[in-house]
Image (cartoon, rainbow, N blue to C red):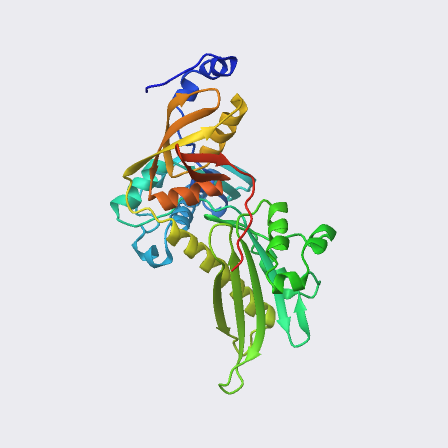
Length: 373
């Protein structure tokens, strides 16, 4: 690697890191780890029950991983459980909540898989996949009725149902604000209804979220013999594109409660968010592109901060350091996917690209402000 260097204590400190800096490569994200897989097996004795449980748990974790990376339409093309030697894909696993009897074994497994063999398998099967993890998406849940719109009220069933869906599911994490005094003073129902971007942005910043989705749920009657329906209209706000609306309509079953209908609606909303994210970030081959960036620095910590963030970007396969100087580091990022997907992946790690006279500049930012249409 060619380098231009001007002597300084800063650069001496960097070179003292030696190969650690010069061999920088993107670290694996936790997308290849599947957590909390429950196992419960009864067999002739405890040892056999444990062996079967660990095998079954790894099989189920592998299926969960493949589904989290791929589209719903490709599920039938995935390898069926038991058709592969899953242990060849496992790099490590841990056990929690372990309970045993003379013939029964119960536990939860966390399984870490090897990234390259998983990628190679999907590429060989020609199944597109995504592996960029989204920043948390902040959900603002509003329940609408003839009596008005509810946001922070305890009677807001839509908020309660979505709260049960919070947490990471595959590549996407759903986050809901706690509804404490600071939240209620930051955003009121009128701000949400009128798309007050400043208030939405302040709330998103508080929860270190990326995009914000304002989701409205309402019950109504159809013109078809008075059948009831649930309509969920959502608007996704982002700092990087115009607001994106979506609409989901569910017919309510005759014996179905409003709560159960909202649960079905929440499942549909989350599934839609996950599918749209994967569609934007699909990788159909493992061919590498290369892009050059300038990273402004004033101290060693600036570079280490950027390096730490780059380690979170799964599509960046390798970082080649080209130049160190007192005020900048120049790197070549070797990545998979297209340049737009690279930009999306970098933003999830609070890294943003700006085109300047000298080339593309990579900045580490904590927050950007959403656009309003």
